[in-house]
Image (cartoon, rainbow, N blue to C red; front, top):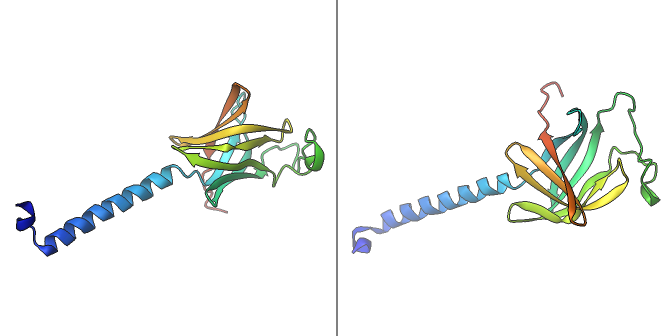
Length: 156
């Protein structure tokens, strides 16, 4: 009976509205789960910004590269605790998030690299409000950092 009341034109309008709603909801959900952009890492003790990491998604995998180090005493720090090929290389340009994949709102199944310790960890990354949560695992133990979205500077 409802189909008899709806003309072809009305059915097309309803279909269009439903598809538009579904599409916009999908885009909104995707933006929430994509932490691309610039993020400041913060010292857990002092609360001071330590570095800026550029987070990108490439072929459905998450990557993060250090683009700036905020240390007034050392402008071009190197990875003194790294081993092998990374030993004594500049920290700026190092990849600290490596190939994480998205599953149920959490980026995982990849690695995180800590140039301060020179160690690589299994890791997970997810958005929590305005923060990027970055968790590294060693066995059953883990440590979570809260990264802050870098505010854009209009003078850049």
